Length: 149
Image (spheres, rainbow, N blue to C red):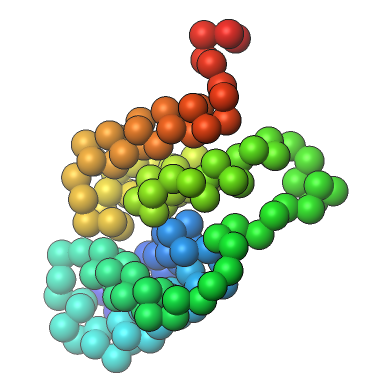
């Protein structure tokens, strides 16, 4: 696989994962740094079993270095996103980074759990368990009782 093919197939997932973990500004910068690193080192990375997972870790390091003080997710303007529960954004911010990434990729971007596991370099059962814990935590934070429906 060429680097261009890799970016076309895995670049959007990598960007989505880093944005979910670090917010739009830091996440996109981290993705750009990771993809630039990938381009420079593709001869070695192209032989890896999971280059997207490796570059996700490179992006995490870049995001930690930036340490920009900001609110994680910008507050949505009510006119732009009328169908979103107002308590969702603050609740997502209170999840751990790994929980937020899994929830955003699976439910926000619609990626299958197996693809999320591959991207993050973890087992599918880890993604499943993280997702279940994150959704339970969101229900608690948003005071949702699934039995009241």
